[in-house]
Structure formats: C-alpha cells, structure tokens
Length: 478
Image (cartoon, rainbow, N blue to C red):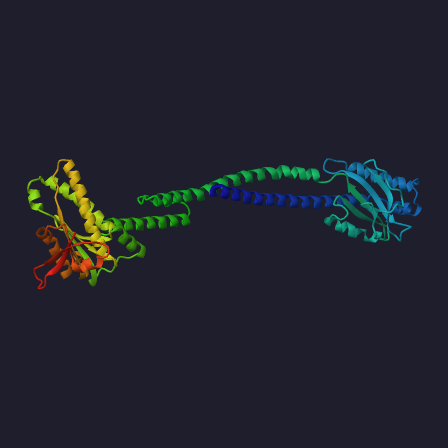
C-alpha cells in the first residue's frame, strides 16, 4: 500500500473515530437530559395529582383494606381522571397507584389503590410494593429516597412519587405515577437531528483527508522524482519549492546537494583529462585534493614525441594534421590514465606524463613502462587504420626516467600548473630525444629499469652521453 493511501486511511479513520465519539457523546448527553426531563415531568404529574386526592379517603382505604367501599371508589375515580387527563401525545400515564404502610411487614410500602392502564391485573390493597419483581426493604417515610435516586435510574426514570399528608402534617400515603412511554421514540427523533450532521462531518472528513493526504504526498512524490532523476545522473533537475515548510527545506537541501554534485562532476571532468580514473576516485573518496605545494618525491617521468613531425605537417593540410593529432592524443591519453599516470603537458607534437604524483604510487616505474609499451601498440593500430584509409602515419619515440623531483603547483598566483621539475625530468626528455640516434622506440634509464627488470626484459643499449652530465647514462631499449 502506498504512503498516500496509508495516510488517507489514517486521517479518515481518525476523523471517523472523533466524529463517532462526538455523535455518541451527544446521544448519551441527550439521553440523560431526556430521561431527567421525563422524571421531572412524571414527578410534577404525581405532585399535581396528589392535590386532588382526599387524604382521609386514602387513609381509610389503608385501614379498611376494602375495594368495595366508597372511599376506594372515590380515590379510584380521581386516579382514573388523572390518567385520562394525561393521555396526550407528549405524555401518557400507564400506571398510577397509592402506597400505604403495610400491616404485615413492619410498615413496608403496600398498595392502596392501583390503576393499571395497560390491561394488566392491578394489585390489591395490602399487596407489598415491588420493584423489578422484588419487595423493597424500606418504609413509607423513606420512599422519597427512591424518588431522589430516580436520577440514577435505580427504580425508573419514568416513575415519580408525591407525598400525601393529613391535616396534622403526617405522611399517610405516597402517590406513584409511571408513564406508559419511554423517551426511546424521542431519542429516535434525536438521531434524526444527529445523523445528518454526522454524515456531513464524515463527508467533510473524507474531503479533508483527501486534501491533506494529497497536500503531503504530492510534494513528497515530486521530491522523490527529483532524487530519482539525480540518482540517474540528471544533475540539471531542480526540486520545486512547494508544500509545507518542511518540504520546502527538504527541496532546498536536495537542490544544494544537486549543485554540489554538479560542482563535483565539473571538477571530475576538468581533471579527467589529466588524472587517471583511479587517481580521481581517490581524490573524490578522500573529499579533498592532494596538497598542491612543492614537495620532493620519487616519480617516473615519460616523454613521448612524434618523429619528423615538422616534415609530416609540411606535406599535409592543417586540418589533416589536427585530425591526426587529435586521434593520436585521444588514444595516448587514455593509455596513460589507464595505467595510473597523469598528463602533465602537451608539447605540440609530444606529451609529458608523470607517474607517482600527485597520488603516491609504489609501482610508478612499472606503470610508466607498461604505458610506453601500450602506447607503441596503440600507435601501430592507428597506423594500420590510417594506411587502410589511404593516409600516412608516423612513428613515436618515448623516454622514461625515474628519480627524485620537485612536484607541486608551479607558477604564479595568476597562473599555476601542477608539474614536476628537476634533473629527473630533464633526463627523461633527453632519453626521448635519443630514441632517434639509437633507433629505439622506447628508451629507459638504468634507474627506472632496475625497478622493473623482474617483469620486463629490455635490451641493453650501452651508455648514453647526455649534455650537462659528466658521467654517461646506461640505457635500455624496448
């Protein structure tokens, strides 16, 4: 299930629960108020009806316990009149009676005159007063306690009592009234008033849940699409600043991240023509560039130069020369970078590469010679390709030397370049120039050869007299 559906269902459930609790609470409150109002009304009816009774007749019935006497008939007539007068739509008396002290049970309430309006058999005078089929354990004087407890519905909210006193103020009886209807029908009517607002609130909750879930998930989906695009390499995408504050802040963070990745990609592209992929990975992984300051380090230097380039360029159009050089350098740069080297500079028809800087490489001699051999192999493939196209090719001489040199950011504040300087670099350049004299494709100094002799078998070419050096330099050819 999607987050949007989950959020929608949670919001809707929360709204339904809160609305249901509100409706249920409203119903319970209405139920309580209606029951209390019914009790007040029945108590008022009982109090009013008690005024019409002759206390002497009521007391006489108690003493005689006779249904045939005129007192019984008079009381019965009054009670029936009260019952008939209260058979309206808003109220209907179903049961009315008098309670007198019992002769047999220590003054417990007993029936005097009992009028049943629902056709049930009325109680006879002297029968004990019962609540829910059980006689009550109280006397007539305490009957008001039950009346007061009717708010708690212990006897019944639809039942009320009123006292009947004689001339001396003595309690001689209690008049009880029970309504023949309950407020259930009124409560049913209450539902007619509660249900429409409840349905309206549910519909409103549904709409609000849809809007809220959409308001949360639409910006979220937009951010997810932006992140997915960035993950696929599209760094030009920009997250929309919309939605709540949190989403706007998240979108800004994503845009900042995208800008940082673009800067990183720009740096990688800027250095990709100079550094190998491995070197770039180390720099990116460390999160900082190598220290660009002059330092002495043991490195290997490779110089490569096209032989007789001047005469070749004189016989070709400038466009052809540029095309040949572009194809040539594209292959050669790729070889250098593949073997952990760094392109230091191009010299028109040649190039200089460094191994062992700016990132330290313990096998820089081996990588430098491997690069030279592979460069010659790539040039052979290029010559074959050019000859097949009817174009003439050229040859290349490579010189390699290893030793100590100063590497770092050389130049001025206005223009700097990372390079290597020192006798090691000069000797590598001299060896490249000597490839013509010794008719060798690759010349490597003894210093560099000693480090790779276990893996590469070169041909000793004797000692080479180098300008600026007193002692000749032993060299090896490949």
